[in-house]
Length: 581
Image (cartoon, rainbow, N blue to C red; front, side, top):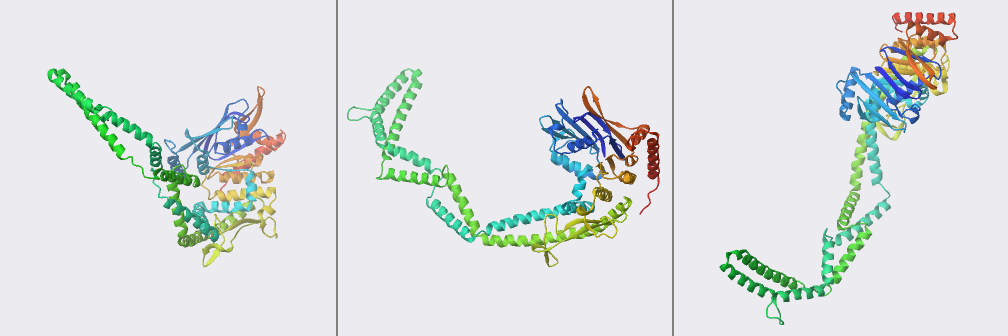
């Protein structure tokens, strides 16, 4: 249940801290005092869009904090969410949800002090609280919403989600089949182009490092004569030529002999002698290296032209296939070969996908039939429960029916040797029908119910659904809109009875309804230091009497007596055992 709600700097609320009871909590106050702002704050803390206009003028941020007691049945689900999102907790008995909205429009959500996504907040909130507002009447008028109401009543959400996964898988398979069954001419042109590309790149016989090697060889051949002259000159200096008796090698060898002899006379020259010998040997090795280079410098006719032609081919392929280098050309070749293989095997792949499509249509049919059967059973129960509730809400002649239809479709799922149209919710189309007057035929709810009748029908549905709903907290935001005082006490009793199994918070303008409150809060608006401020006060019995009297009319002894009478009737009704209908 919702234990506490703390609101700071939200709209015209400066600082409000509320503690709620387990039973029936009622909130009243004059129009514009800020009752709906409390619901806005609850919606924001539970993940609704946070608008910067919610931040109280002059404040840096608004903060809303809600403290929930977690029921036993919800603990395993919340535990799984906490573990997945790495939310720290000491115990699952209590969950603290905080939302901070800054004046720049940005917001932060936290669970037990751990920053988390609003989607996670919404997932947890769905396990803890339901908010029924005036907009629910609009949802009730939309037939597409009726299937979700029925599934909630019958606890079929998980089965419907399983079906949804199968339908998504089927849609993926069908998209793959469609892609493979493209126009034959288009596919043939694609095959022709791929074959050409594969042939062109394969015949090029490319190697990953080839381009750099070719550039180096091209550079060497382009500078052949200069390289030859330089190496010949270096060799002549090392080995000597006709113009000199000996080269550097001969002189280094002679120098090495002289230093070696000197070292025999003075051991201190030993290292110098070894160095002289090493230099002499290295000079000989250098000369050998240059001789080998000269021997390898033979150039065949047209060799440079062939290298340049090869580089031009590589450059042309890179431009044609938008590649930066040879590895990218080879990657393109591999991709083209794979696509060509896939197209070549497309017929076999289509057969395989069509078989999978058939199997999925059978599975979808099986799950859809299960859903449909359970919906029809639940529909009868829900219709009877709603009619009973409507009767107690002074709509004794009303008839309510859950109409479930489905249609055959040659492309649909398989059920009992027939094929039925389906979507993510199965084969059923669900619509609520009602007749509010004796002798009138059943018609779609949206075309029959007036504002007051819609509110009573919504309340009847909520009351019927609450018997199967495990959500611990229910909030009703002026659910009595369009309903007069005559039915106020009836609605008050119904909401109080819902509070026997759920915590109920209700905003109302009807004194007859408010008289059933276990805890009564009054919202007031004052001007303090030239600023409008909303206050919320928990009323004691005497204050509750005065509030009910004010709600009934001008301050007078008759209004107070009427308020006393309402409280007495409410207490007697709450104390009396409920008569099973």
